[in-house]
Length: 68
Image (cartoon, rainbow, N blue to C red; front, side, top):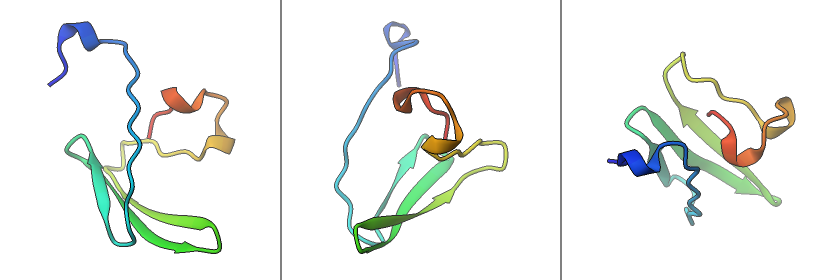
């Protein structure tokens, strides 16, 4: 768990995944690589309806501070 000293910090993690592999953000958001074709990655995102998911081009926020 993050300690008090981590409050307000932005974290970044770079992962390598293959098709059909995924990862969790917290305990409620699951992201899986559905396919990779012609330089494009298709993701499957499973999250509660209350979680806002936006593509970069739909928001003016900086990428590191986006809510997914």
